[in-house]
Image 1 (cartoon, rainbow, N blue to C red):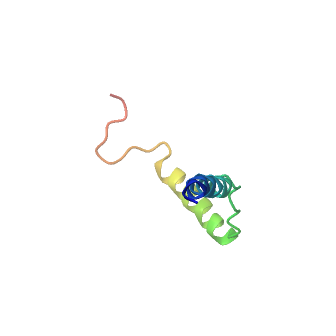
Image 2 (image 1 turned 180 degrees about the vertical axis):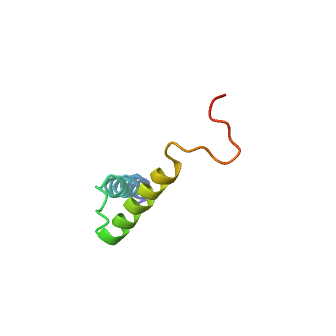
Image 3 (image 1 turned 120 degrees about the vertical axis):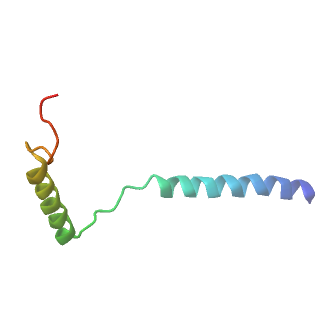
Length: 63
């Protein structure tokens, strides 16, 4: 009976590891939130507008 227990423990561990590996490798879900994505695009556009081609006050452009 003891040998059977020692055999069952690794078998259960392998099954649990296989289930976890399958769950970890699944494809990511789509966010499905277009309002959030649009907000992120507006944020990125604003960041590009405010930093493109302008130097900060007090910063020298040519070193």
